[in-house]
Image (cartoon, rainbow, N blue to C red; front, side, top):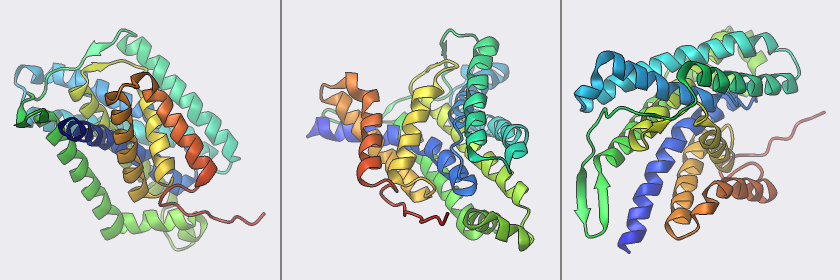
Amino acid sequence: MEEFIQHLINGLSLGSIYALIALGYTMVYGILQLINFAHSDVYMMGAFIGLYSSRFLGIQEKPGLLSFISVLFISMVGCSIVGFLIERLAYRPLRGAPKLNALITAIGVSLFLQYSGQIVFGATPQSFPNILEDADLLALGGVHLTLFDVTIFMTTLSLMLILRYIINSTKLGKAMRAVSYNGQWASLMGIPVNKIISMTFIIGSALAAAGGILVGMKYPKIEPLMGTMIGLKAFVAAVLGGIGNISGAVLGAMIMGIAEEFVVGYGASTYRDALAFGILILILLFRPAGILGKLNVEKV
């Protein structure tokens, strides 16, 4: 039983990180009906912005909650700018083009960020600085709840509550929902569609940056291709929950994290990456809209 609870804690911790990345996928898809494959590389950029900002500020010499919050804030701001530039320079010029063009561009932007990262940051994995000291907050038998786990839970929960408030209780959120429903109608109502789309990319990129910092903190090895697999898993989580549905993205991410942790914990670690694709195949076969998603009928 203790082993089960420990795996559950680890799975929820991993799922929380997947949730931050999956939210970016689902927000952009909800607005543009576009899978932003470059999103996983924005997450990678967030980890490296955190690495270099902590070195520049000397934060690794004084780890603590303030240091963690400082690096998190800097990384989120930096990735917000990256997300804005990606939308403005790569996607906006293709707004009226066929969706396949935008999809190919998304793959191209992803590859550009990956291999530019290898040139700028180097291909060798780097150690993420110690910005927060880990410690056991609860130890009962074989169950250990660490400061890192609580920090990941609380950071993810806080950001999701802020996102929920923005979407449900602000003018920006109402505009985002309107554009998601029908961009042309929203434009006729006076909503600046281009600005709303840019804000969607900015918010989603900031969440990805937070995921990059949390991964760097808990698994302190980062490299320019680190976004590839975790991005695919977060995308599967978004599809599992219902792509375009924010609550579904979180639910799917938690299921993914727990399932992966139990696969690893009970002796099938070689299948941890294959699990994501197995789940994707099953969900596309039996419930293509996802757990909380709804099938939309398109007239052609």
